Length: 294
Ligand SMILES: Cc1cc2nc3c(=O)[nH]c(=O)nc-3n(C[C@H](O)[C@H](O)[C@H](O)COP(=O)(O)O)c2cc1C
Image 1 (cartoon, rainbow, N blue to C red):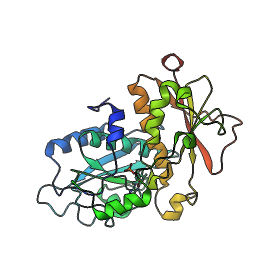
Image 2 (image 1 turned 180 degrees about the horizontal axis):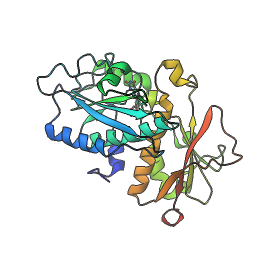
Image 3 (image 1 turned 60 degrees about the vertical axis):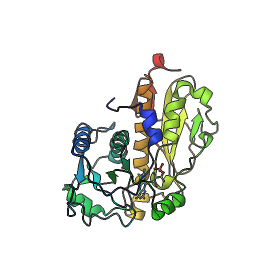
Image 4 (image 1 turned 180 degrees about the vertical axis):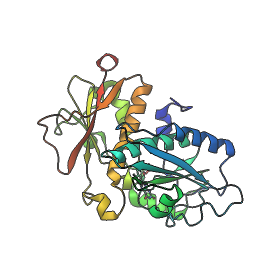
């Protein structure tokens, strides 16, 4: 693990920051971020992406001029921008990879904020010179956190209910979608699941649903699309943001499981005959190693 603190602590520490100190990123911080990004370019579904730090130097007002975050972000002197190649699960992969970077930045004490809607896609795509077979699904400002959240930021957080999260029983299930999963039955996996529950998601919709098999450390991940988000990408002219949310969930689950030495791997093994709630689709399963977990 390349983080200085336990990943569960970093996950708890992160929250979206939209107000920054007008201060250029330290050269050493830039170096660390760039090095981390360079080693983070293949997702669990094998899509490839490349990430870049677009940062302004002290006194440079040109680099970030007009990139476009529609008044939602104040004072940021750097952005994490990535481009991912088109493939079937590229958005889940992008969510996973970008969240690893966001957690790294959080570990460095920096603020970040996933932006999948309120950013000017064509300007950021130009900045990273995205090719025909690539897209830029989301970006994030990165910088020193301002002491106070601005009024706009407080309004946005209030609008999205950013502090709230669904309870366990709305997200995690045992064998079927009819039985909620208790922390007791989840056993050692209660912590990785809790790390999914507190993850960021677009408009804080929390579309992740997880079904545990009985007696086995096998967890099936589903995306339950929020009402009105059924064709989110086409409808809002953004990437399909709820697929990014699924990649973020995979990132939190895997990194916290690994930290607890719960070994396993991602596999596409949709359970047969499971009746799904409306607007739900299967994404992937965590196949835990039986010897290392309950
Ligand atoms: C995929 C994704 C896209 C997001 N897009 C935006 C956005 O365009 N603008 C914005 O202000 N916040 C955006 N957010 C931030 C969410 O609103 C935020 O994560 C959520 O409200 C939970 O708050 P927290 O991150 O402080 O825990 C996005 C988050 C995710 C995961």
